[in-house]
Image (cartoon, rainbow, N blue to C red; front, side, top):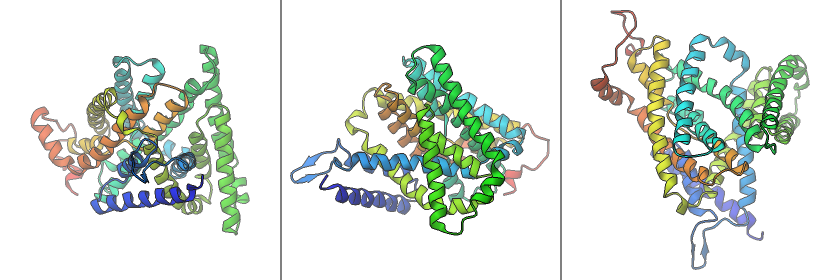
Length: 410
């Protein structure tokens, strides 16, 4: 442990270097964090007196990565509330259901057709279903598409994914992490998980007036201690009843999003979210042996990428049609939300914690790397991609004849 501080300092320096390179290239930072972690992890090379392996600090970095997951999900909860979902309307519910239904079904079929057991297939379906809200949001801002007509549907699908993720991880964590071997025991564990989630949301919403009063704390130091204490306490307790700790963090965010202090909490959390989030992706890279990225893992990842591209584009076209968007705007939906990132990694880590097959980790790493790179590129080139596909498939605009498409006015 004598080199612990030096290794942590070196890790943060490498993370910063990866971030600077990605900013220079104007590209998603997630692949760089993962690649840097893979390059200097416990499986890295040892050259003469230079040891590129992070040995002493790996457990501590892994712990900081877990904190990063908590802050990522907590912040998402703050950005989204149950009330907003109810007010979002029919189009988001229909579009989100179409997106989840198509991609989850394809992911599940991929797992079964590849010969994986039920638990592994469910993890694979989760990995391939949920897009990266961080990458999608960054791309929309960078490409100045926030005012486009399809953006509301894109954000709605992301919100719908968040709700699906909360329910799905609650059920799956009961199935994968439960010590019960019987179907009844697994179902009971899943019901406990769902009951806990619903109880926190219902009680939390009822307690909003009290929370508004209790959180009127002038001292920023005490305010931070109360927020962080609540976050870690509830997230830690949720883990004891087989609910993923990340979901506990999401639930705390959902409840606090309803209070008058939500904006203050967001400003408090953002630097921690960015810092520990970066460490999370780096720590994920540390856990991957670069030599294990060949063989079956890479072929499974390539197959999953193809399935995801087809599923996302199809879901975007169907979802856009239900919202009366033009074919071009509908194509933008599918091409924008194709990126995969933090949630796919969380699903892979859930499989690791449950002692499932080792291939899930390298598979998810390759899959996330490819789509974290390919996703922003496809979003940027969505116009030529649509026109190329339109020559083959001749997409029909089913809206009112002679109406000027809103997306063509921009």
